[in-house]
Image (tube, rainbow, N blue to C red):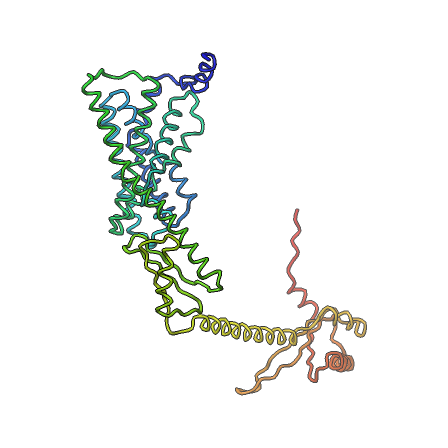
Length: 450
């Protein structure tokens, strides 16, 4: 039995692969300061994260979290608390406060001048923290603290930066300030505080577990005071998040029952629902529905409201949104109108194609036939030309331009004209000659590559 326990302890022993404690502390102390390059990196990361939230780009937000140096002072605070180094704790908290203020200022300025003011889903998801966010922050902080104390740091630290998500809630708080929305600001700051505190607490536990030497020995009374402060802080942060988590679970259950109600009472009966909106926070709760063609009488709506209780949808009022117009007819009329517009476009395109075909000649085929009858001709170009006879009328005449070394005699010119009239079924055809030398001057010169 003892051998089995020893083997299990070997597997879970964190001392294996641990870096020297003095080196770890030096690394932690060096990463908490926000001056110079670190401050610039933080400001740029805030802008990147704000842009990602603004355009709802998850990839951009993840990139901002990876380059953010916010983890440094939080880990430093955990170490300071764990080894009772209150100077390190104060310095870490001071730098974290500076970083938080810089983040709020930069993100507020960005969202204030940004032309896109609409709250995207990535923003909305950072305004209502719950117990799951605490679990993510705590266990993510554990991974981060363990990784820092290893000789080989490996890949966990970037993953911790993404999982704990310090940047997005800070930027969302800036959005709340820019928009004057206290709901956004306090919700996001609460999530940011949860992440910071529970990363710090998880670091404190790792420091204690690995038995880092304390800077000063505290009497039992002061140690108890520190424990009470940590316990009180956990309770203050965890109780509201448990409430939010409960609300989230209740809302999910409520939405599931609403979907079941709509499916059974309307969809299964062939009634198309085109509009649905639930107001979960209001008292009583409200369910608004709109239909494609179905019209309900007041007694039918009353009966539907009563049937909500059968689906365990309590304290909810069903509101059917309908007017005197026939929505289905309007949609069908719109579709038919659009089809008519499309048909007119098709006719116009077909007419243009016919005009284009009527004005186009197969010069290559004509040249092959002309060369048999008139070998003196070297090349041709034939197309329709429109002439203005006066201000009110125009005439379109097929014109053939040919090239030859010498002009064709009148007899051959007449023969070619008569042949073209028969060949193309055209009454009037005009012939013009272009000298061969002049034609060659018009040709692009060949570029010989050396």
